[in-house]
Picture 1 (cartoon, helix red, strand yellow):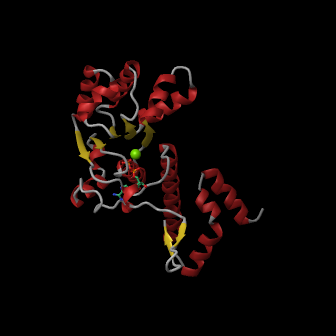
Picture 2 (picture 1 turned 60 degrees about the horizontal axis):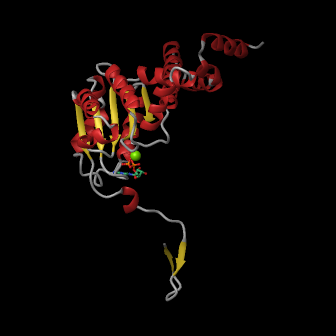
Picture 3 (picture 1 turned 90 degrees about the horizontal axis):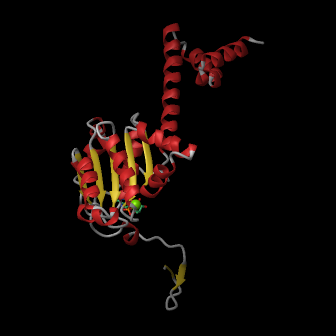
Amino acid sequence: MDKQQTLKASCRTLGLIHTRDSLESILHDAEENNSSYLDFLISVTDGEILYKQEKAKDKRIKEAGFPYPKYLKDFDLKFCRALSAKQFRQLGELTWIDGLYNLILSGPPGVGKTHLAIALGYQACEDGYKVSYTTMRSLIKTLRTEEIDRRARAKLKRICSANLLIVDEVGYLPISSTEGNLFFQLVSDLQEKSSIIITTNKGFEEWTEFLGDAALATAILDRLSFRCDKIQIDGKSYRLENRKSFLDTEDKNDGKKKTV
Ligand code: ADP
Ligand code: MG
């Protein structure tokens, strides 16, 4: 084995995967720049740290279970009048996760509740927080099957160990009192431990209706609202306002193409 191969094998044993994979270019750069021993070692260790941080971030994003990526940079504040630029910045700074604050995003369909929730979740993953995304429907299924399904148990473990839990689409489907109680139990368990983002199409006064139980609705909202900001996003659906289509129509009069 030549020296480079021996070194690569040693890197592998030590878990220095980036150094192993980029050995040729690392050596080339060091020779090119006439690096000192110290600078060389610093560039090797810095490269390895950066690589490991990237890997860990990718793992956090994968394990969060987002349905699709959404980013804060793509969130059009002009369209969302419920948030000032300052509030939006504060949200993106994520110190509220350290303070164990919850966030309730409510409003009609298409106003950006899921976009904002996922984008905050992505940012949280970038910044080193553990995040778990679920729809209410999937969460209820997980809670119901925890005792008999190993995958549900694993998902619940991730949910309970996250710094930020996102529960999307709360209130779209009515739930039974057993399911409501399971949800209450989870919210209680997570209080003082993690932050929760809820997106919902229901106002607080309508929670009784979809939970089918006034006392339960009060108890859940009491726990969620203790340390919480509620953002009511009203207005038109972004989807309807920015509808995209792919068909062209011929304008019979001038022969020019028009979008449908
Ligand atoms: P909701 O969850 O409130 O029903 P979504 O978050 O799913 O709505 O938004 C619907 C679509 O509109 C998504 O593609 C989302 O990216 C886009 N959208 C909504 N609000 C905004 C906004 N303020 N800026 C940019 N895109 C938006
Ligand atoms: Mg949504």
